[in-house]
Image (tube, rainbow, N blue to C red; front, side, top):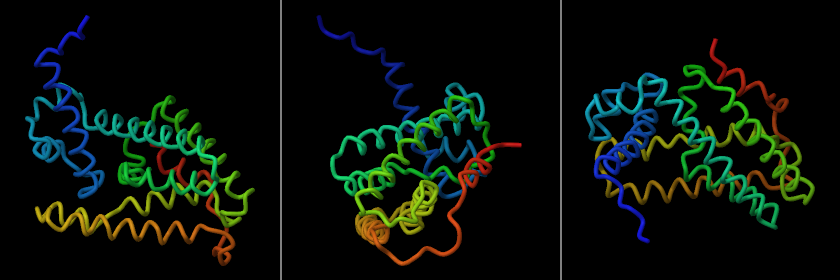
Length: 218
């Protein structure tokens, strides 16, 4: 039997949701936590009413972004752990995460409530990344002073792409391929800096609470 076709309204709602989530990421990259629902709806090409029918508040929309980001990280980590080569596994995770926008939600840290389920997903991601780091360190391919928190911080820093966001905002899409290619070169340079032996890193390694405290809302 053939699979029933989705109702036009359901298909439209799903399409609008995808556009809202895409637009929310882009507006967040430009405006940070002060991103307005009006700007997000306009970027998505939907009305404010459509946004509020799907998400009752801006916080709910941002929470959904966090959930999706955590799921993407977990999936990328699972694929990385399936690789046999320790370096390719770690480098592959970093590259895939950045391609998917990993770390780009840093501007909303502390401004949304993180549910127990989100904390649990984050705990799982920490454990899986720790396994990648341990494998790479044991194989002698990762510099010994790199920690899990170093890598999360690296993803957050590299997720910012001012050149790409500026060109996109200006509508100069013809320059985007060159900007994306330049960013990939920078990522490759940074990955090379993670390789052993490397020069000693300055200061003490950041603690796990560096991220936990930032995301916890008073």
